[in-house]
Image (tube, rainbow, N blue to C red; front, side):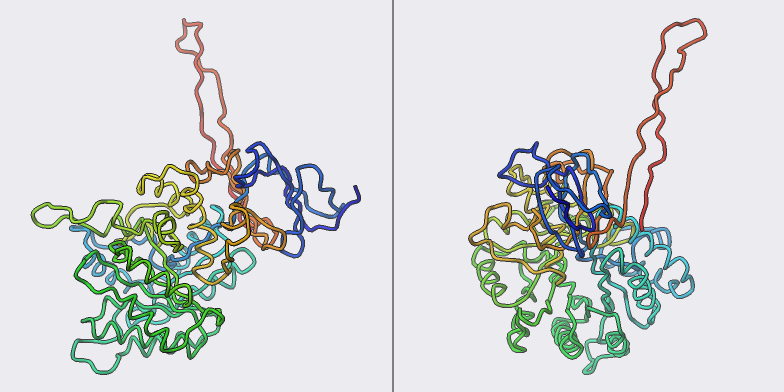
Length: 483
């Protein structure tokens, strides 16, 4: 067979197919950042200058995506006052106090954010929507940091910067005009490199001002041709009217359409988990026309929502504290992305930066034991998350095989953004027990390799008089490379 002119060939990978044997291995050839061919392993003969990478039978899945992560607020728990109640109001209070020191220790701010990006890329992340706060406490310090790091990592990871108003845009319930936080936000969204404008309407003094917050942010998004992203409906109160309906109404009035390429995304959205079948059907009809996306944040939602009342009664079961992505897709046809949000801060003390751990968590949390549900979870931290932030567009499943239609199996012409999970020999392991050893590809280039060195075995005598030998395993330090 004649050689072909490719940039890179990933040899001997297994794909997340349902229609082929798990033992089938493939070669993925890429050129110009896109998939050029997918052939049985060993059949692709690349040009002599092509880079050949042997995946050694590892599983190749779409690269991962943080559809919602706070670049400035992870890993600050050691800078916060000790948590007493763990409640949402306490989290806001201690975080606001810690934020006041961000402008005083810019090196720490950059170091924490760089660590987030590096660890994420090594896990397989090649796209993220990064929230950085803009308000009277931090000014533009966090925004400047985010914009700088987005430039530094542009060849490794697509970083969308969100100019985010975590604090209220109105100073009090008596305010008729937005205050200084809004003025700062207006300045922030005009800066080159900002892709998204966001806010948390629920922090406003009342519902009236929360709705005004939504209107202001959508107006800024329209004016500057940006995506919009809201921390919305972050409650489990069946008596609270979901604000998602108000967002959709605003989108209709503004003739916001999918063809614009700009999305409106809602994060947390725990109140939607209480929806009836009829409400989900209404939301599905709306999202078929309007570009509204949903991102659930399990690590944060499970920790913060559904706490016991003073009598000790737990109002909502554990699995009901975040949106059940597999069930919502299975029953209502709505894709829900899953994302990390925060790690080691007052909103989310625990968790990992690895999106695949969310898929594993979902298996137990939602008690899903079927492969179709596992594929939904894998998609939720990869393809669905990328769709939610507008970096790729979902296709209709009509007329395609199950493999092709769910966007997990690569196709010729797709962007060559992958993560190979070494040591896994079936796609299911990427969800059920994702391994540490990984290679990350972005635009057809290797941007990170992560390996754990093998255990070294040495012989140790049990005693000076014993002839019995025991094996002692010594763990050597893992090797990591990011480019």
